Amino acid sequence: MAVIKSRVGDLAIFGGKPAFSSELHVGRPNIGDREALLKRINDLLDRKRLTNDGPFLREFEQRICASIGVKHCVAVCNATIGLEILAKAIGLSGEVILPSFTFVATAHALRWHGITPVFCDIDPTTHNIDPQRVEELITSRTTGIIGVHLWGRPCEIQKLEEIARRHNLKLLLDAAHAFACSHKGQMVGGFGNAELFSFHAIKFVNAFEGGAVVTNNDELAAKLRLMRNFGFAGLDTVTSLGTNGKMSEPSAAMGLTSLESLKGFIEANGRNYQLYKQQLTKAPGISLLHYQENEKCNYQYVVLEINETVAGISRDMLDEILWAENVLTRRYFYPGCHLMEPYRTEEPEARVRLPQTERLAKMVLCLPTGSAIGSTEITAICALIEFIVKHAEAIRERWSMKPVFRHPWRTASSLESHI
Ligand code: T4K
Image (cartoon, rainbow, N blue to C red; front, side, top):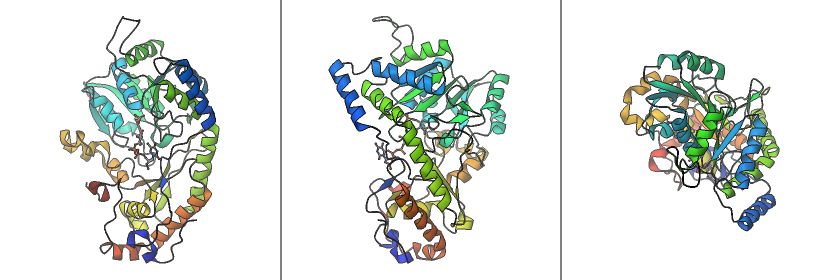
């Protein structure tokens, strides 16, 4: 049972007892059917095939193709390496346009190959790359565009496809958040030249670490397969540059087990999202990002926007108060890639063209969800947020007198806005 707060002094940030005795996470992994996983692990140990194009890997790839209706799935050790391989295989070079409001992996994968990420602003309502701004950033060095389906909400694919076609650019879609989501009735995975999924531990379908590039292009898929395995086309024949991007059998075993529970995971996320939606109505200035309920959604992120002027409290204060209560919220994707290194130093003036990114990066807060939490925790989290907003003025008055909040995961710089 959560500890109920009746006075501001009851808040843990001011010395009270935390609302929750154990930590609630944004990314507590979904485990699925443990027995099924352990059986698969035993099988692979008996078979002594631990990696390198094993049977679980092949089955995992086939199941993904079947579930989203795409021709090829090339599973990889993680989505970051997947994007690096994809960038090389499809011939990206020079400059590539992408949003700054994304996980830094999207930019790093390009920069690792010496490609310059050109950060584009977002649409403040969708949080996705703004196609209108994309066109302004195209130069003679531009070779591609990467759209990110942030929070699993597809970006404006048709507009991006049209721009890419007109300027003869490649279009890749970072669908790390969007497995099992649809866009205009079609499953995410078959758009652009290729799309990329992440199956990292905190994704709602996980392979411990893992990812997959999906495409309908036969030639590209063949190239990706070679490059994922050092460029080997035979036992001792190397026909292209390559790396080690292979997904191991234990990861594929977890991925398969996770896929079998997909329906249950989505139901749990959907239920959690609906509960937050119903209960987060009495805190002015706090709004919940909505999903298009006529499309397939995985609901894996519960995203708040905090309007400081209306709520009377900043996103960062709310974040710190909730952490003290053992609600480990996340400020994804603060402060935006353009304010992270090496991009911050390389192009300090980028922020001038990214006003929506900078505004939103200071407002967004992700709440815990997934199969590890349910209605009791959500009701208590919503009551806590409501209490905090209701007492915002008193909290602000006491703020400078509070003890310094410490948590082993929060470094000094993450405790305050350093931008
Ligand atoms: N593109 C986009 C748009 C992405 O969001 C990502 C990754 C990528 C590309 C690249 O995908 P991968 O190369 O990773 O496949 C996490 C993940 O590491 C990352 O995969 C993810 N996006 C990103 C949004 O979040 P962190 O640093 O926030 O994770 P961490 O370790 O702080 O975990 C979050 C919470 O989950 C914590 O409260 C602890 C809890 N947790 C985490 C793990 C790993 C657990 O309870 N158990 C666990 O095993 O990056």
